[in-house]
Length: 352
Image (cartoon, rainbow, N blue to C red):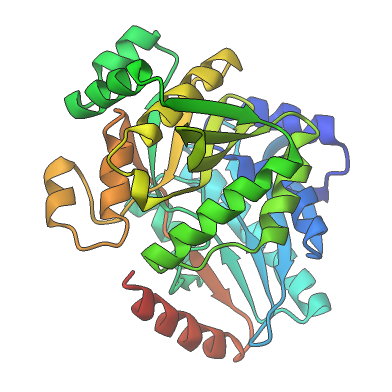
C-alpha cells in the first residue's frame, strides 16, 4: 500500500460514490470550505497496486493552546475492503506515519481522527493497538440518526411515530404555516438570528457567521446546500441548513424560536426537506447527532443529556441509530495535555 495526494475532484468524488459509509465531511468541497476558513488541508488516497482503496481528508487546526491535524469522518474504505480488519489496520498505520511527517513539518502536537467506521470492538482495537487514546471530546457526531428515504412517502409516514405523523398532517392543513426553500446568500440573515437565539436559550456555542457563510458559499456553487425557513403568519419561526451530497441529505444546522413551539412548524419543515431529498435522488436522510445515551423512546424520558429533547424529535420520523468508533487522539507532543485539560473542562461545563 502507498499514500498519494489526490488533486483531481472527479477521481475523489467517483471513488466516494462507490462507498456506502460516508458523510459530506468526506466531500471534495469540505476541504474547500476548510481552506476558506484559513486551514491548510490535504486530500490523500491509499492505493494497493495502483487501485484506490481508501481516502481521507486532513486539516491543520490551529489554536493558541496547540495545533493538531484532524481527519473528519475518515478514512473512507472501499466497500469490498471495509470489513477486512487486516486491511483497515494497515490503512490506519500508513495514515499515522504520513501524518506524523506532516505534524513535524507543521508543528502539530497531536493527530485527531473521527472514524466513519461502525463502533465494534474490532474496529476500536485497531486504534488502541496503534497507540491512539480516546479523545476527551468529539468534533463531529459519533452517534447519528438515519432514515431510509428510498421508500415511498406513504411508507415513510407510516413508519413515523404516531405523534410526529399527526403533527405533520396538522401543519399541512394550517394555512398560517409556510415552508420556504432558498439558495440565496442574503437569506442567511434569517437563519443567523434564529440560530443565535437558539444558542442563547439552550446554552451552546454557535458557529460564527463567517463559518456558516463560508459553508453555504462552498456548497451552493454545486447546488448541494439549501436553506429551509419555516414561517408562521409570515414570521420566521424555524430555520435549518441541509447539505445534499451524493446519495445523502444531512440536517446540519438549525434553530427555532420558543414563542412558536406550540405550532408544528419544525415538523413540516423536516417533512418538506425529506421530500426535497427524495427529489434530488437521495436515499439516506441523516438527522446528524443525537444524545449518546439514548437507544429508544424510553431512554429519552430518562436521559439528562442536553440533546434529549432534540433527539426525541429526530427519532419521531423513524429510522435507526448509527454509532461510529469514538474520536481518537494520537499524541505527538506534551502540548497535547494542555489541550486535553481544557477540553475536559469544557465538556464538563456543557454537561456532555
